[in-house]
Length: 306
Image (cartoon, rainbow, N blue to C red; front, top):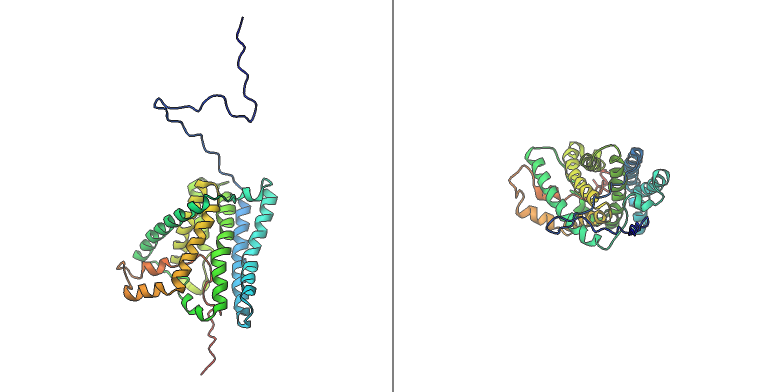
């Protein structure tokens, strides 16, 4: 009498066989799933839409800031004009080329663990940024700071509050959706992981170029590219953008607190060149991920007195 063969496990149920182990009993980790991708056009469109909308929000705000509208009106303008089109593109792109789950298509799957990963990613990003900034300054690469005039904006409270809210809330949400969601996943469809991570980081830095800063944009773009690469590496490894949204918000929030509280100015007064370089690493690290954060009048001289 033959013994019947054991029934095979039904499709979708756990395997009846234990995971393979080493002679010491260590379980081999299962192979990671492939990182989801999107067509390249989804990422290209996201960059074009974001850059145009951010430039548009700057000039619209410059025109309207003198009307003394309520702060909520300026926040709504910055959010709607600066970031609204990117949200629309995300909706369109994931509908056109996605799987049907718009949030999953860009890795926007928040978990409570993101609150723990976020600070760790932020700390790693700051360390990487300091290292890159030190190299930029040592090589005499022209660099400007996109927060040089933020202290002067305290007199224009409406503009300051609007900038803080967009930098700490809107920018982390939408820019992570764009760069670590759409752009990273579109680049992964045509390049390997290291190239895709570096590529989206470089695009992140270039997207913050402002013609007003001239040649100083070179160094600033490099520094912010380092920030983008760090966030991109984390998003790739975790397969999600929730943790980088948290890190992004901390990054911008800490910088804004340092600037608006006057801490940076006091540090520079007491030790203007702590690294003995042509420029201060402490000053150049104080950049915020928000294009056109200063100059509420677009660089125009609004003083009409004699």
